[in-house]
Length: 318
Image (cartoon, rainbow, N blue to C red; front, side, top):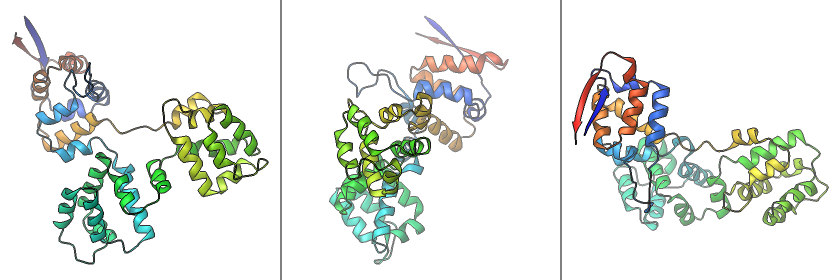
């Protein structure tokens, strides 16, 4: 059986794919997530991680593709620690990393040639790239909470850090603007209907005739309510249900939902063309054929190949 694969021979991926938002969207939709059947740990089709392997992308870059550096819980936690202890030392940081068996990160710190009295604030300022790499590792392997516990950071604070972008707080602020006279009693009624007695217990610290403004002015109480309502536990009603019960529309709630991490495929492709700006569409498609992702090849043909005279047909015999 013969399969004709059509591709551009002289066009750069940077121009034809990465710079074209419609092509990149179609490309990312097909490669961002694996398709698994049976064993959820073994994908049935190759996806962006396999593409990264084909282009010999480093492990650290692959990890960077999966995270948003602007919302790093490890960075937020270390900044909190610096705030309560301005003399938080690199040595103390190394000891804490050893406690959670991240000796690889200890070694990274030792290679920085920092002074014996250096603080983490000094390290962050002088070795920003290494600091970011360490935070990235802690974020990716979900070790930042364990690190925080070894540094005696309160559980409530770690919870606040993990929900630094709080949908619940945004909802409560919207409700206050629209219903400034809403009482604690009315909020408790909505929470009881949601079977969120745990939130009611926290709100009980306010009198029932006080308004939502009282809750927003008590920052500690607000943090505790937000931590509980921001939880996404199957079967447990959260900030979304609370918002709808108090009159916020579905469209508004959709706008408030966390956007998630950027597409790893898009970030990977941006990196690949930075390293290899002369990468051609032909080379990319040959890699996709090797990965047996002809659906992606066909998508590229639809968006690019059919619109140009610069084509070449290649027959793959099976």
